[in-house]
Length: 104
Image (cartoon, rainbow, N blue to C red):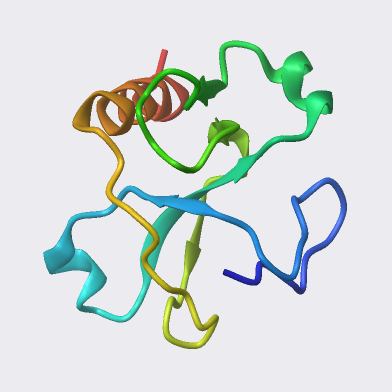
């Protein structure tokens, strides 16, 4: 999906694979919680805030950027489904996301 326009350190690109994190019932509202996926090597500095797809059995490779999670209108951004991620990957991303939003 196209993630432009963006600003600052947000990930950009005319085509960017993303992992959908919100449930179908929520997505029917017309907006979806997504996490971008990148193969860029610069994201090693976000260790602990990425989940690798290496060895997951998916055709899509790279890392899921938890720091890049955002809401998106999949229809307006002309998103297409490529594949279904293993539940273990989604669960790992959601577990890390939970630690970011839980009050200390």
